[in-house]
Amino acid sequence: MIPEDVRAICSDVMRHRIGLTYEAEAENVNQDKIISEILNVVEVP
Image (tube, rainbow, N blue to C red; front, side):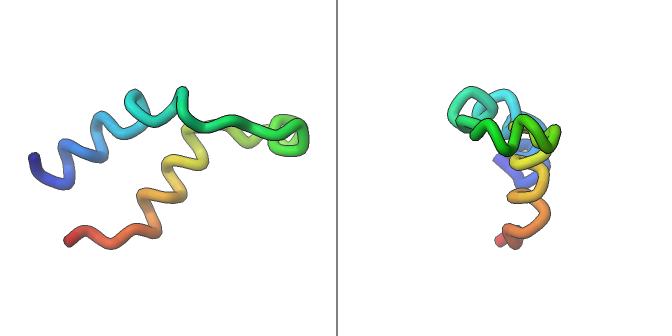
């Protein structure tokens, strides 16, 4: 697997593992936004 493959499937694999607080839901934060932010911060080896 290459980094682009991981990025392509990451949301589908991880989305159900992230629980949102009521505060996050009130601020319109969703799992895809969280995953996107994580992927933007993590450096590709």
